Image (cartoon, rainbow, N blue to C red; front, side, top):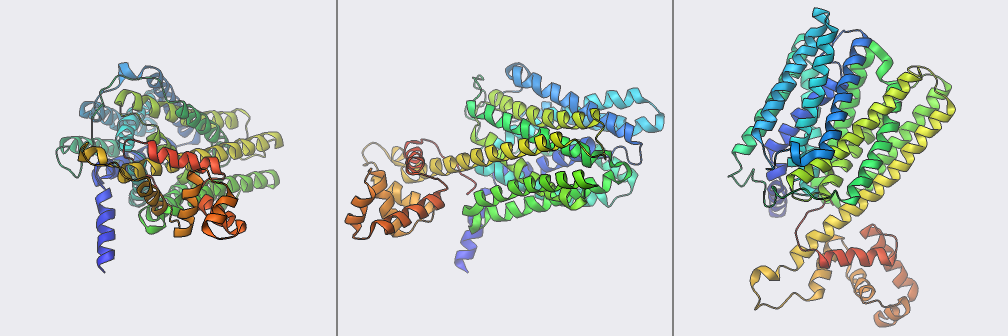
Length: 502
């Protein structure tokens, strides 16, 4: 019983700062608003499909343009502190006002109000995305994972509550969401003096430097991934008309359930298997695309295949935010550029895919085989790239955390001896759940010893050594000796702490 109490105490201690309940709930309210106002029909319930299409494409285009401008000129347009109440409250108010304008446009038969409101809505969404995004990634991979997975899990309940309301109440709730989200953001900023909510701000106002090269790779993979996803979404889901609301809610619920599974695994003793779970869900989404492609080529698509895609999209979203957290710099202007670049690539991909589907008139029709195959292969390539990048990021985060916990000598003073290398090796072995014999083999590998030498030293056969080595590779999620040595080196050379998902 004591072990259980200790475990839950340790888990609860992780939900601070960027993963506090205020940060998680505030971000969740924003993302629920984004889903319902931009990608759903909560502001235009019962409205003809051409009004829905106009609002969607206009708001998404405005958001992409605003994000692209920020990605290029972040130092000029963003705040320098982690929190900026004026930024978030101002854009939250604009988001609520634009949502109200879109909801009123059909009743007033005012297309100009619809387009104007959609432009402001897209800009407000981009700004709030940046504001919450800086908070989400501010404390590294582990906190970002807890925030995003927790926010999507909370979104499952919030979407269910809103969906139960009558149409007018749904519209009103959607209009109020950005204001409530901005209010929680402001409250979070006001409570930064308390340990539960505090997010370190050292270096937050440092001038922006060049973007990390890895984030360019993330942006490219996101664009390719979302280009294919947007094409499939525009072909299958968006043209459905009166059934769009139910289909969108089913997709949101499915994604929320997947996020709940990730969240539970991420805080349980099973978290060391998280990379495997993530890869499975990304591949599951790819399988969904294959099923949809086959169904489109042979007839009409089935809802089950679309829900499989929604399952995998939860993994994609968590992956993107944890990758951005792994590339964070601590400088708010540069971190804002990182978020803006990746979000612009993501939304531009969705916009490009949907525009292509609409231009080719493929809504509800059988796409050309070449387009289907092209979309599928783009998905496969981007999926493989994301799995590889996430695996590297999570392994790197784990290695950095190990180095900090295994070698804290600098804080104790210069008179104390530095930790023995075995301490760091033992910590590495504990993190990856290596057995004593596997740890022995790892120690020889780190020294550059050959398999015959290790077999002779341990008085075992060479095949036994190779078996232990394969187990080490599997547990550390690497594929060869050099990758294993690189992982150990990063653990030994890292200087600052950062928790990983697994």
